[in-house]
Image (tube, rainbow, N blue to C red; front, side, top):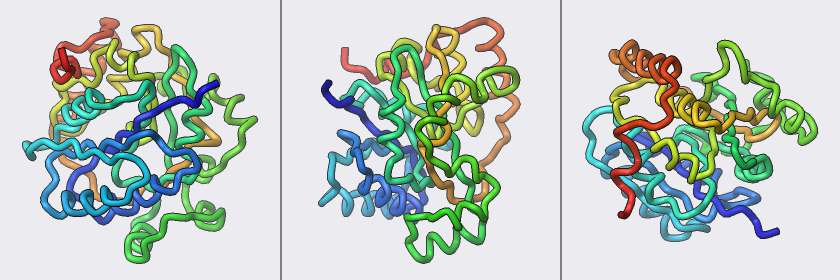
Length: 271
């Protein structure tokens, strides 16, 4: 059987120090994606220069997908990246994440027709995050993980991974809960629901709203536990002034069984 071809999308905004470590961790994957697309929500020249340096010897094509800074438009830039992705499977992370060497391998090993994957993350403390950035750390041992509050998210075990895939956080209050920094999808499924809803401007549960439309369309969520390990660098959170508006969009999608957003990825696809 031919290996599954995938595109890795990394969303980023004006934190080149974190992106540097993220890209280093991606470059040392045991199974590399066929391409990496940087969904850049308007970063400045420092981020551009960093990406150009990495492009010189990155092991796979590294594509900078950028639009001007006009506030928090993560949904829009992710759609632009999805439109440019060339491969049938899409793995998605954020630029403030350091991934385990087998992160991509774990996602591809669990890819299943009619499903999308939702994983978790280890949250590094402010103190540990500062140390990681200062020393350029991209490898974490069990002793490091044990210091965090998310130990369960740092363990890898294939048998439990498959056992939990259709059992963990799939119902009740967790039914639509996902972390956009650790998800993967079939690209055709993303196109079927028209990608991210660009009515999301400013911080909000845009990833959960996408997950809800996928589930409304019959594409079931699977949990990626005991695999897909990643480490999240601590940072202050963005403006949440539109949180209530954006959460109402999610409720509407769930309550009215919406499967397709009107302002989505289709506007960037080649006709």
